[in-house]
Figure: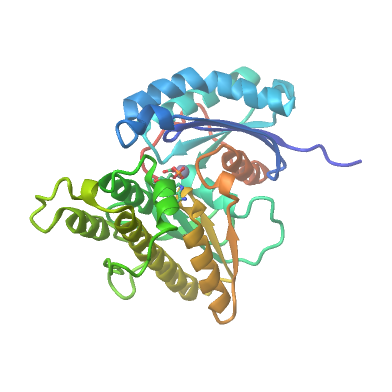
Length: 347
Ligand code: KG4
Ligand code: ZN
């Protein structure tokens, strides 16, 4: 008789998306619901934690109910409840953690704690069954830019991370300098298509030769000076710029960030003798990054395969949470009611 499938309800509230999903056996999506708060935070040019928290409180149970309904399951069909409890905004995480603990208690189902960044990594290999590890995994999101040595879904080891801004944060801040809409990543990518990536030689900060850390605050400042002048007095210069100039700035900025991300990933892959490369997180939706990383992998000796998250699973979602939780479920790694949200990752 075929084994009964394991259904996991995943919940995600680490930033500005309230998400719930039911995933069977770690790879079959029964439902995926994401309530985005973009419209709420747009006018502030970034996520306002208290507003995010309040919206999560309003959305969490309708989103979970919809995920259960779409999957056509009830509590009896669920084998475990999984929650991303770190890293993220504490006031946002607490909403999902409380909901997950409540359901786990009420339904008498085990609770699985998931690291949001590890979940982003999982989305890169989601649905894949045969791959050769170790992998160098690059996770690029609004809050984090990290490289991992990925030997298994349960024990990724951090190799390096940003010492200042995250890549997505740089996209968002540069978009705001260029007076483009929030979130900045998709807006910059759209406009960069019409620009020349070689128009402006923005700095590529690689830090020390052996460093696998990142720094993106320098390039953000370089764009700011370019747009406002060294004395920062040209406050309205962007208003007077042609569409072509703005497109050139966006394309040149994007090219510089992509160059750094690809070069650091190449170094990480060489250092750990990676057999493959993984890419996940919101910025992984960027086509220039996907193409450039793919080219680097092809040109490696020997060539490495690139596993990249499907675009719909690059930005925050709960499929990645439920999918990773399956591996923890199989390994019997559960948590209890003392689980708390943590702003930073604890390995
Ligand atoms: O992973 P994510 O949804 O949330 C966090 O965990 O932070 O990532 C959101 C980030 C934002 O900074 C957004 O501007 C960026 O991902 N992003 C992109 C693109 N789509 C989203 N950055 C560059 N190009 C894109 N196409
Ligand atoms: Zn994320």
